[in-house]
Amino acid sequence: MLGLYRALTTLGGPIIQVYLGRRLKAGKEDPHRFNERLGIAALPRPAGPLIWLHGASVGEALSLLVLIGRLRKAVPRANILVTTGTVTSARLLSERLPTGAVHQYVPVDRLAYVRRFLDHWRPDLTLWAESEFWPNLISETAARGHPLILVNGRISPRSFKGWSRAPGFIARLLSGFALCLGQTQGDAERLRALGAPEVRSVGNLKFAADPLPADTEALAALQSAVAERPLWLAASTWPGEEDIAWRVHRDLAATHPGLLTVIVPRHPGRGAEVAAGLAAEGARVRRRAAGALPDAGTDVYVADTMGELGLFFSLASVVFMGKSLSTDGGQNLLEPARLGCAVLHGPRMTNFADMAARMAAAGASAGVADALGLRDAVGRLLADPAEAAALAERARSFAQAEAGVIDRLMAELAPYLDRLDGGGAP
Image (cartoon, rainbow, N blue to C red):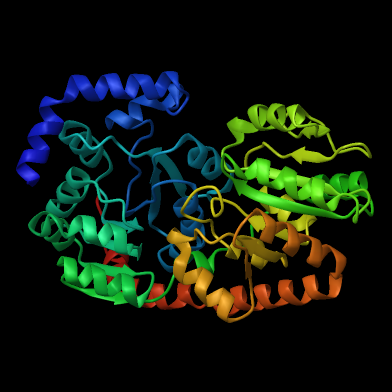
C-alpha cells in the first residue's frame, strides 16, 4: 500500500497543486511562505545537531513548547526546528518560540516535496507529536537512519478501527518509530496492537504545558471595562455554540443584572460572522478585532483575536469549553484549569475523553448534557461564587498534579539526547 500511496501522490501532482491553490485562495495557506509547503526551505540549515519536532496544528504545537524549553536545557548546542501545517499555529509559534528554535510549514506529503525538505534540514532526531501519520514523511524520515520518536501519541478507538483495516500499512509506518509514547495506557495498547515495536506511556504532554500567557496591560483594561459585572466565557466555540451561549445569556440576564457573555470562537476569522448573527438575534455585540472594549450596554463581547485565550481565562471565573455541544471532539480542559477557572464542558469530548473522565472523577470539571444544562450550570456558579471557587481550585490542583509528565518524557528521551549531544550533522 505504501508503494501505491507513493505512486498516487507522485502522479497526482497536478491535482495536489489545484488543491493547494484552492486552500491558498481560501486563506488556509500562507501566501508569503507557500514554498515551504513544497519542501523549499525559507531558512538555511544551521550547523550542529538539529532536533525536528512536528505537531499538526495549534494544540499540538502549544503542547510542544514546554518540551522545547527542556530540550534547549538538555542539549544547549542543538538547534530546534518546529513544523506545523496551519496558518494559525505558525502565527502563535512566531510569538512564542524561544531563541534557538525556528518554525517552518510541514511539506505536503508528496515524495518530491518530502525529500527536498529532508535533504535540506537533515534532522538528527525527530519527535512526532500526536498521531497525524503522513506515510511519505514518516517512511522517508525513518529511512534516513536517525531516530524517529512518537511523543504524546493518540489513537482513538475510531482511528484504531480505521487503521485496523490496513494492518500491514500501519504496521510498516509504525515500524519506522524507534519508540512510541502514548498519551494513555489505552493509546499505548492500541499502538502496540497496530504493530509499533517499542511502546510505553508516560502521560499526556498537554498536562505539562505552561499556563497560557496574558498581557497584564490588556487584562487591566478589560477588568476596568467590565468593572463588577457578572461574566462568563464560552471559549473555543464552534458553529452552533455561539447561539447556545446567547440563549444562556438571555435566560440568565434577568437574575444576573449586567451579565456579560464573552465568546472566543475557535477560529477567529469567524468573528464578524458570529457578531452579525448574534446582533440579528437582538444581542448588543462588540468585537475585539475591531478594537472595541465592552461597555455598559454590551451583552456579548466577541474576542476574535489570535493568541489571547489566556487573557480571557484570566478574566473569567466560569468557563465553558466549546466543540463539545454542537459538534464532536472537545477542547483542552487544562488550559482554563491552570488559570483557576471553574470549567464546564459538553458531552462530546471524544478527543479528550481520558482527560475529561479523570477531571470529572476528581471533581475538577463539570459536564453538561445540553444547552439547558449549560444555562443551569452557569447560573448556579454565577450565583454561588464559593462553589465556583471550589471547582476552580480543584481544577487548578488537578492540572498541577499532572505536570510531572515532562520529567517522565525527558527520561525516555535521555538516551537519544545523550547520543545527539556528542554529534550531529555538520
